[in-house]
Image (cartoon, rainbow, N blue to C red; front, side, top):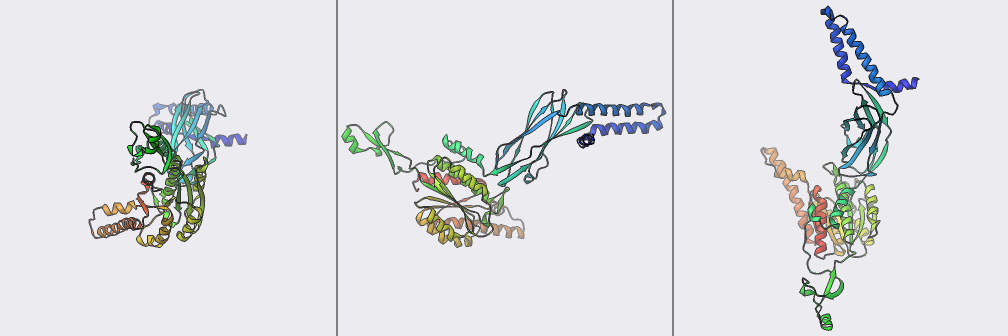
Length: 448
């Protein structure tokens, strides 16, 4: 009995309507002192309110299972993307109810507005949907789902607690990866900003000799086969396949800088995942190396069906380190792991020429054996400051410093180009599109 009453008052909440009724009753009692003709009306109002309160309690507590609720969530969440979640709810009462639903979401989101109001008819079912956008990889713990139900009288709410505690993992942006996969398969990459690049010349990979048909390039005519057969014959070529594409991700302190809630490391991880996916669709082999003061994960380039999932699992666990990248170790690892000429995409960040000069000797060595593409980030806040009109002495000083740093970024691109090193200077939000564009450009120019 004690347990029952404990559960009763712990889950019973008064509404504003009840407090309004009590307030009106109190006012009428006060007025009865000045207007005796009110007689017993205040007493009748008070006891009528008490009777309605008891009826409301009986209506909501007549059964132990008046409402059912369950969280609908995916098996894992995608970092930096809008993830769809929801709360499924059923009304088992024989009358209409109003509900307020609270879903206890992980503290990482720092949101206190996951509170939904709705109404349900008898035996009605609803799915209340909402969106969460995580900005860090890792495990996120969800709590219970709580439903506060009220009857048509609306004097009290009864709380139902549904134990829905679960832990969901936030992985690198696989939703973005799937979007690019679908676009690549259907040849619609241009719809999301990927440039259409004209192929230069022929691939080196010969496929077959076939009969000439209208529209074939005259330059592909095989004159020896034509002489033997008596009909025009042409050489047929296919895109060169099985090229190795390695993403080398710098996870040192240079990649800790945040932008729009995500660190630069997370932008690099998302872009490398999409690049690996597109490379595999283009029938190249994708691999991965992560590094800081020591080498992290190494995934040798391959084209197996499980390769992308292997890369995804490795990227999920990567964290920013707080020391500088050991470029000598990166160079020796690249030389020992990558045995043939490959496209090496190095995701890092440089804020000054001095930062580049410390690593440049090792970048030049890597570029001797592989096609090296250095991807680093444009500081969008400094760009905004440099473009802002200065109105006072302090503003002129800030604008000058911002322009100096922005100019250094452009000098870095030119310095890398002097040694035949490809580069991308990209704003974080455009990193994935720019990286895919560059990969397709290099492939079209047959540089890999």
